[in-house]
Length: 228
Image (cartoon, rainbow, N blue to C red; front, side, top):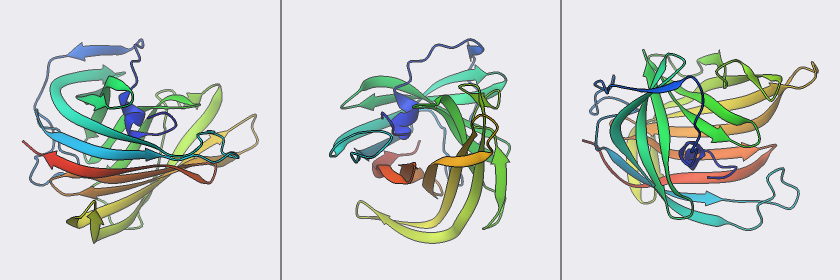
């Protein structure tokens, strides 16, 4: 997804040093209890809508609607010792790519292509922490993007809520938020993007909303899923 973030992670046909394919190993979470299932053959289909305004930093005019399907494919990729579980991504608008999901201990997240900052990583959830818990993570493998320091402020905003997405009712949902910040020329960190994630147990991400420089840029909502 172009300024968007779930295809966001998808259409990155990036080939970068430090990545290597390694033998698949059993995913850390079990599908019946995890907010981030990674079992082979599990599939999610999302409706992805990208918006734009004439004053937006990402000048997309009107709405672009896409259908994006993610399927865990049984491969893993090692990004500087952070092992990701790979998903094949098929977009009606942008073709085929790969998404990279990681689960290290209780921390779940993914790598994505995020214009204009490049290849980034986002922690979506720490599943053992309570509501209002906040942590700081680096959205870059080397804590720098385009020569400027970056950080992500992650917060668990709500727990055990009910949310209806495309006519489906999900319970036990966790809502997290991420402030993406950059420090340009030593002038201090300031927000450039904000992301909301809604995750259901045994399902995964059911909704994602992305805003850039204060403008809602993308909404991605779950249409159907199969957890193996």
